Image 1: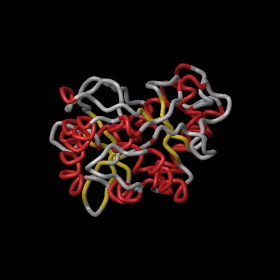
Image 2: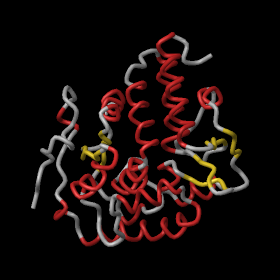
Image 3: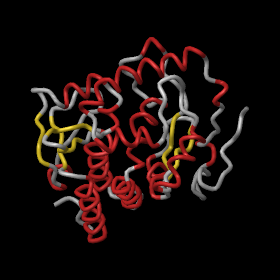
Length: 260
């Protein structure tokens, strides 16, 4: 049965344009939608059991990801909320950057609810529920990463100068989307663009990618292109490194010198 998101935990933050937000009707997903989800889940999880970060693997279990069906966000949030206070809120598609960051600052993750067509299993330009829920949301169950992402949202929402906006976009890209972490003596993946993509993940751990130690200055100085495999990525020792970098970015932004 259709149930719009009305619970206080999953309501969009006050002051944001309500036209961006919607409800999820789990009963509306077709057998093909569930089949596509299952194919993608099986393909990625088979590799991620070996290459994925512990934060992703444990988070996927916490939020109850299931190969057999497209996730019901209300069920995901019932599991996630008590752990870190985060929630996935359904949106109609891309939302304006400042509104997206404002959501993050409130521990709300804008989540696309559509399923990609079977003809585009390997690559989709715009996000879908597989990228958003499978790729992003498991990390929100990790307390340190959850704190980092909320802090990032608050900092990024303050950026107004084009240079500062560009710098925060780079920090998001090389951490939340394409981040790597050193765990148990190996480099593993945690960024959603790597978690959800066979090709990007293989490239990130392969010989053609220059994997560099994470530093805030290096990340802020590194340009990227969204429509190609990444030549350079950054490896953190643990997620506390991200949180500290975001706090430093906030200090610099207040001082008017985010980039040096």
